Image 1 (cartoon, helix red, strand yellow):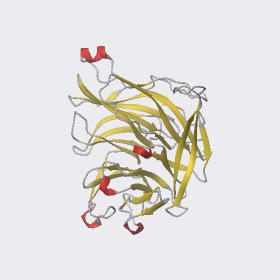
Image 2: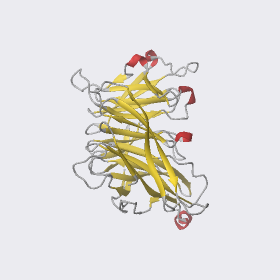
Image 3: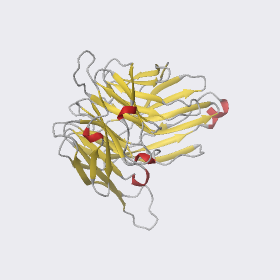
Image 4: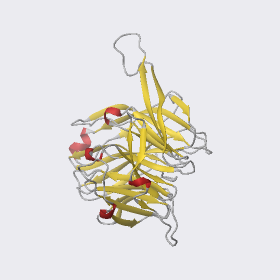
Length: 379
């Protein structure tokens, strides 16, 4: 643990911006507030050739906060619109505890966050057998044209909204042209959605989802079926991508994912797929953040984005992460060592896919990454 600051209310979600602004992140709260922060890192060394292992200091600094919704509204999830869609401008998609899915624009220069669509949601989750609002827990955006927004609610529905934006005006779109589809494949509320980018195995965008039922699932919206399933022993509230590797001997893909499992801690999982269409999910590491306190909950965590791997057989780096705690209302910054490795003997034999794994490391407070927890499950 490197630095902690107090917040005015409980933290529900955290995301780094990425790109040139990868030291900036935003957090949303239980009182309708969107807050922006930046992480400042200083290296102290006794010589001009500072190394990564030299003494360094990392601190969180508040930038600004905006009261977007009423103080009684919980912003349950948000996401920055991916940078692959520059004509959309600087946008955020978000969900609230009254079932709404919203779009908003933000500006770091002017310190502003404003709702689009005259403050109205683009869609609302409803209870199955009553015409009353349902909790919306999460959303995810696919940077396609037209834009696809996925959202999950308490009733177990996954809603797919397709929105057409105009190219002449950055923030203009037509609600009349919006199309919606509903998918039902969970036993409880849908609390996390992560679109996985197409790989060498398929040009289809697959969804990784989490639920109250403690399961993480790989889902095909095209075929409307679950491809792989694994229990993580806790409600899966957040799923964040840590990277993707495609191998060609044999042809396979591995996605590395950071998962927040409420009372079961934070886990690192791998989603693996092969050319013959077999997919599996396994746990490769666990992080007890913020410690082993059963009375505290970790609903949110994010890792600072890193650059592309390129053509390599091994890549290793320290990953900077921020996690938020619900009961004691704190933000915690920490780091772990992440290693992407392709064992040459496995590639020559053609018997395995990738060798991504998380290396065990003690951080300054004794935070440990135990290996070998969980086992693969394939469909």
